[in-house]
Amino acid sequence: MLLCINGGIKRMDCKKVVEERVIWIKEVLNNASAKGVVLGMSGGKDSALVGILCRMATPNVTGIIMPCQSKRNYNEDRDDALLVNKKFNIKTLEVDLTPVKEVFMTLLKPLDPNQNPMAYANINPRLRMITVYNYAQRMDCLVAGTGNKSEATMGYFTKWGDGAYDFNPIADLTTTEIYEILRYLDCPISIIEKAPSAALFEGQTDEEEMGLTYKDLDEYILTGNASDKVKAKVDNKFVSTEHKRNLGLTFPKK
Image (cartoon, rainbow, N blue to C red; front, side):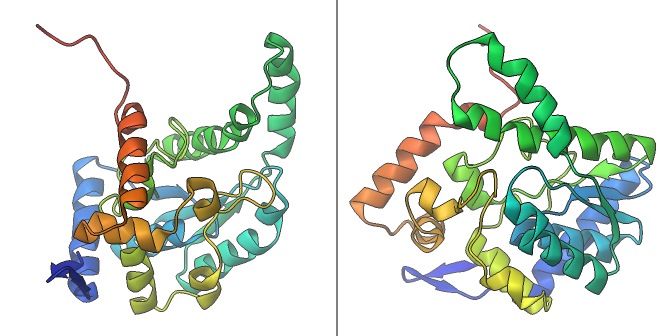
């Protein structure tokens, strides 16, 4: 992890961080008697890092590209996912989920006049979850998660979508840390330089939707330093999204 020194941030030992996670992934697979790993390859930073780490742990890694409606899914994100898979020798599968989502929308819209757009945008990651779990179960593999600590802190993920996985080797890493490790691993520069986006709808970017930059968010997470405005935004969001970071609330035992 990055270390806080006098309110600042010191670079991590990337070699050690990578080696420890590779060993852990091997242990997870061995304990589950799993034959390999399946993950969704979005063309973004997080899935790139998870794919690379898993491939360092086992030769049997499948990265599934799953475009769904968003134009970015079919263009730059797909290109970047293919680039990572090719460079690191990750098996590639691809399935277009747009026709499936269109059927869902046709069936779901008549349920109520309220047509909250995000209720439909979140169908995308949930369809992807079904896809990766279907293939993983058929191949006796585990599903790797690709969410990071910055996103989890803000609740910036879809519950039962990209928030569903069997194991996650980057859940404790911030976006800042992930970029540093990707540079260390010589990940394609296009993935490192493009604006992070869940690409659930046209023009979406993570930072615009969250209302703050990853730089400010990660500095607060890693050092505790931030403006009052950033602190309030992050603290409030952390509390309101607590339900997303567990498997569902149950009545407390008395």
